[in-house]
Length: 397
Image (tube, rainbow, N blue to C red; front, top):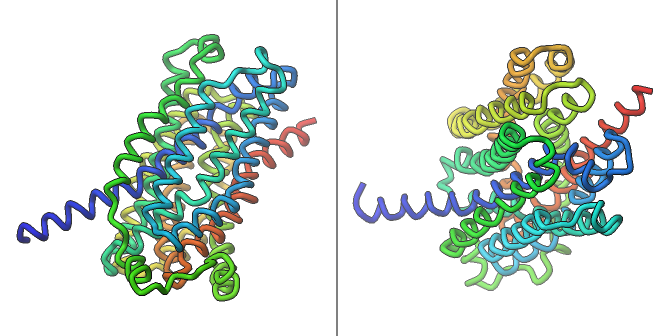
């Protein structure tokens, strides 16, 4: 490899990091919020019982997701009309500001109903940004990666989001491990949200050096971009949109139930120690981060379909027996069951974005993928913690 090849490789790796860093921030925020649900419920809805407070927190969690398709349409339009880089810069900026502001919010004790109202507004602002962040970086990496390595590099999108979940669970674990409960209620809960500031500033700085993809440059130079990508998308890409929605229904529900909602369920309804449950999630996320790129790499060698079929079949077959182990097991049993789930989900996440991004024509890729990904994520993945918590609570009486 000569000097120029080294420069190209270094530049591409920098682009990978810049593309993925926003996913880390996005999923860090959503994970921290979910893992601190019992704390947030006590602070923002103190007049309700513990479970009702957590349900209220998950309602706001769901509202943040409900706005994601709108954000996806806006940022997808920008990406298809004005460039992938511009959309990625906007999304990370819009994610960082409201996340940090949550760390400064007054609680119910200070301003009564204004506290949950402000929390709703900031969560919805985050939802607009999140609507284009994950899929925007997926489109960027799909177009920037060599065709014979797209599976591996696109898997970094999923791996980056898991890094965010890992960071969120790790911060939640450290918070409970080193601060007394009263200090967490007093001021400690703010720290995870304030940590988003340096992460967001670093990500924005990294993205300023991104080079626009050659695919988009070609459209821009030839002036063949659509004037209204949103309208053209519905006319030309409806079959692909439906296919991607169906794929993401399964992935969204499985991931959110298993790795985002599960720690809260085990604490709230099974009586497990919060520190132990967050430690399990931290370990599982670390394993997922390792397995997902391996799955993407394998897909470049053996094909995407086999890995996807294995992942879906394994989750369907193993869900009931593994859930039984998780509900009644000790620390080791719960960890083992979650690791088996991680192995199955990794085979899906490793091929998710290389498969779905490739279903759309390049000029409408960002608009089509953001909409098709966000609809099931918003209305099934984002509501899964709320629905499960509500029905389990009701069935216990």
